[in-house]
Image (cartoon, rainbow, N blue to C red; front, side, top):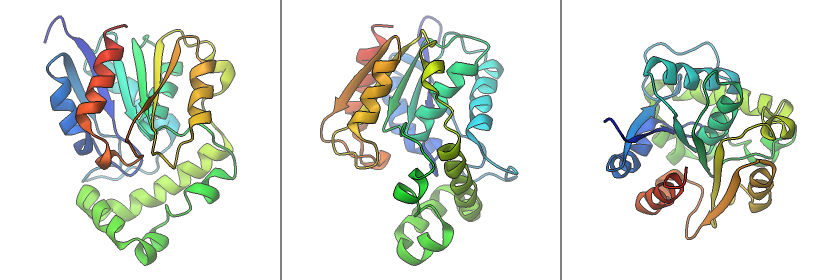
Length: 232
């Protein structure tokens, strides 16, 4: 729709765009909303050979070019927020803004083992059968392949973080870093530190909000997004 700002919604690791459909409906009142499903996520027919932050960032920029999206605003949940910020650093066209929710920024060679070692097919099958059932609902028979790819790129991200502070200092777009106050995966300090590094960064903590997107109130989130985009 002409005259409305454009916003692209990005899901998290092991997720899919279907998890953001309720949020998309709420935002459509004021924005042109686009949903992107990263390769390897959802019930895809031809699995990719691998997944990496670099590849996902390129996918986002290709999506923007393919759909001729002008002055894109990006909302990214968890991994989606990381990809959105990374894509902004390599994009041939400027983004209008990036909004992140529950995005992990503090990556080291220990992060996978300390926080994400459950991202392993055998571990999930033996300890978290309900999670496997949820993954099968989202991704069908491809869930196992996706978990393997995700494990690989989380380890790679710990060894080679893409959001270098020197690069972030050059980003002039407005960025809103949000975190739920009940998030036990992402810590306030790491979120605030990124907001402080960014020339036009802002940090907002959302009350009564955990990490899992299924437990985030879409109406509350839509209000946060609306309020921010009114200023950019």
